[in-house]
Length: 311
View (cartoon, rainbow, N blue to C red):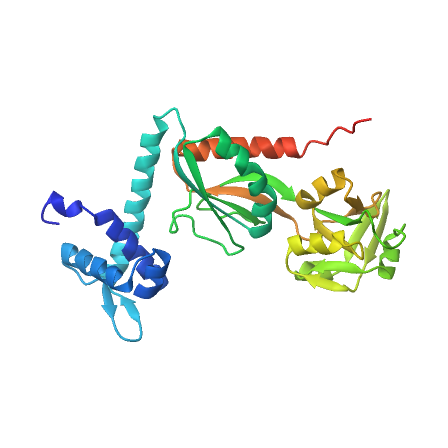
């Protein structure tokens, strides 16, 4: 780079270059960044001219990253990360959380927990705006510039900071208006409509334990569902029994809308995982991110406390 004036727009250009390498096309990058393909092409051309190197080889069929381009890509990731750290350090000197907080989370976890928590958070921190993306796809928060992610997994990523929120446990439940007499033994579940998640582990039999007794029950699902939200809606109709995460079930049980089935029996968790908050390995978190994590974890702790039953 010949002079410091050429630094103008350099970091945004690196960001466009990173996205182009990762998507493999100008048009895909343009869609992600709300630009036109021609604008993406001009930015890459300008970046190549500044560096005096060919970074990408264009053809009608594909985009190929040159050897130099691969090297610049890895350095660009470090530059963007360093810029994020710079802004985080500057923000840490402020007493007031501010800015845009970008969060991604799985659909059900985000819908049940975040949409319940965020309205109060927005009231408490009027200078913080939130962008929430709900998706069951795993998003690279470094590349897509998210401040944090909620993730349900048995093994959090080693190159990130993972704060455990809660174990994902399951409850066997039915509607308060369930159409049949409830079973008294696990084997009697075969006489009922059973709703399953489509995940394979739920099809290998359920293990029930009660005071030293163990029952291994194989059930045939009447209804397979790939969404816990949809499972809940189906159970509330009162025609079947289903197994759903306790973070969904507990409030409905407390409100009297759902009943635990075989409450004296413990159901072994067929899919042991944890919910985590995932952040980048920054030495200093932005204040907006720190207050969100602290407040959300405290809110979860309060939410899990048993509700007092009034007379």
